[in-house]
Length: 137
Length: 144
Image 1 (cartoon, each protein chain N blue to C red):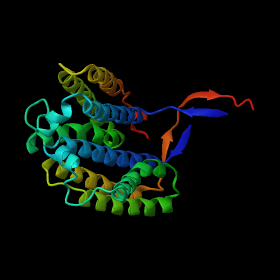
Image 2: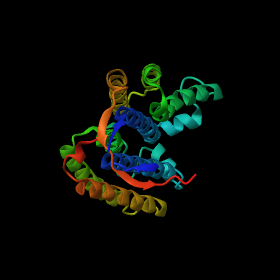
Image 3: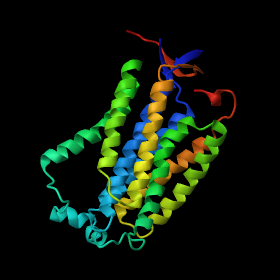
Image 4: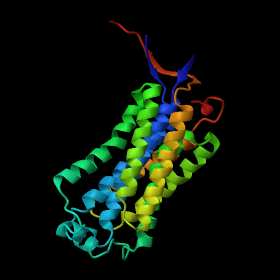
């Protein structure tokens, strides 16, 4: 008999955050190919104003949260895990929606993929069945 | 049905994924930092950027990359020591490859925190299995 393991919600959430991160990485990377973008970057302009140390720290924190969720989705207690994922899924959908305003076409595409993924995070977290099975693995 | 599960392996793999994304984002945001691009164009780092140097960087970068997979397959004892070696080398890379910006300090802190967690899981948890409720998604008869 071949049996297929049923994938626990935790793993789905963790994998969704991995996918979200790759969208961010490639959104940023392809963005450098946009004509004029590198000149603006070299001049210290990142679209939201001057790229000061403080602004870049803010951007770094925003990028680090989905990355840490790859791990936290696996270890947080289900009762906390669920709400953190519901909130961050919604929060990041809104943030990405805002950064898509006036963005190049490729970025809007990656943005839609990213929003689909973060809405799935919220959906899976919201519908996470709470009970004995939710505690394992 | 109850099954044994090595959840620690997956947690370790996830921690190395966090380390990798921190490294990638630190590099991208490093590019965005005013002046970095001009330095690259001018080769103005105070030392030559040779292909040998880039090879060294690539080797150091490949370490956390392969740890994502190796944690799923290595025997427990080997896993402990390979994780320890990878942690030492990655710490050297993170500290040695740094730039004095808030953003780099932030990512470096996150990377170090993640690999401290790696050490804890590798030495305190790896090898322990937990029983889980196994619900097969589907069962297929092997017809071979």
